[in-house]
Image 1: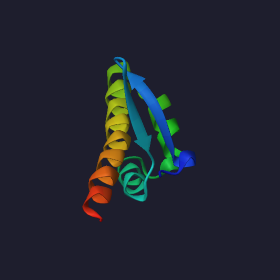
Image 2: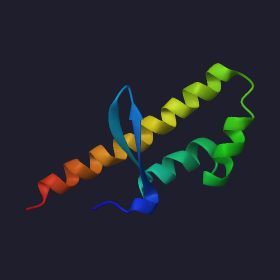
Image 3: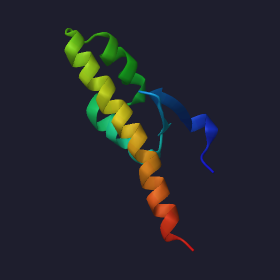
Amino acid sequence: MLDTEKSAVIQIGGKEYQLVLTTRATKEIAKRYGGLENLGEKLMKSEHFEMAIDEIVWLIVLLANQSVLIHRASSKWP
């Protein structure tokens, strides 16, 4: 069971995706933005709308992939 405080379900094109903020995802965000606290500020200050959209897509993919990785890892355990 995933921690509901660190996960959320979103719907894109009628399909549900679970987004999970894991330690691994946090480390990737820190590499890209300098930390979680800088994420919102950097997105809001994007000079170009297209750049902001690209960053939001990157973030959604990163968080959605965490649930895939968790599922794969848990299916390997008996």
